[in-house]
Image (cartoon, rainbow, N blue to C red; front, side, top):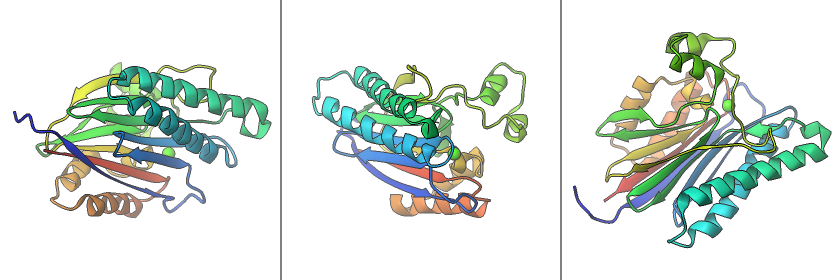
Amino acid sequence: MSTAVLHYLAVAVTDMGRKRTSNEDSYGLSIEHGIYLVCDGMGGAAAGEIASSLAVEEAMRVLSARLADECASVRMAAEEAVAAANRVIYSRSERNSRLAGMGTTFVALLVRERRAWVVNIGDSRCYRLRNRRLEQLTHDHSWVDEQVRLGLMTVAEAGRSQYRNVITRALGTQSSVSPDVFEIEAEPGDLFMLCSDGLTRELGDDLLESMLSLDLPLERLCSRVVDAAKKAGGHDNITCLLVRAEG
Ligand code: CA
């Protein structure tokens, strides 16, 4: 394995889709600080949009400040950012009854050279394509995913279930929340994808794997994936954030 320094390229596209009249997804990225983040908000009226944009804004603020110090613990910075974002959303919803119960998913990839951390709450996902093989790195915090993991439901049944929208963990809906945080190693050529469920509901993993394996510039790859999700139905907002590690 080479020991060359890794560089990262990143691009994101978000799209309202074909059925919704607003976009409740938000994303943030900072190549300088190695922060990549996708949030998918939920709540009535404009609450979902507010929740996801508050989450991105607050998490980017905390993470950029903490990770500017190269010696800082990434895991601690991630936990601090999640707690801060949770607090901002929760207190805003407590002050305004129209925003009561608003929340958001949160999936982040934080990179530092060859080390990377995945942070997850809810059912937005992080995937990694390595050697043309796609692997889902996160577990959905959703009722159907729990049933699948318990062996009580197949993946196909989960996709058709009337309860497929029920998520079991969200940012901002409770006074505190615990994210999944785990460390992985990045290699040259790895392609990471962060996305909202509006993408993965439309495109299966096999199709995503073949699309992401195409040898295209990152911008074209990203817009091609989002366009495919729109053509497949576009029932929900679609967000795709791609991060490529280059040696
Ligand atoms: Ca969604």
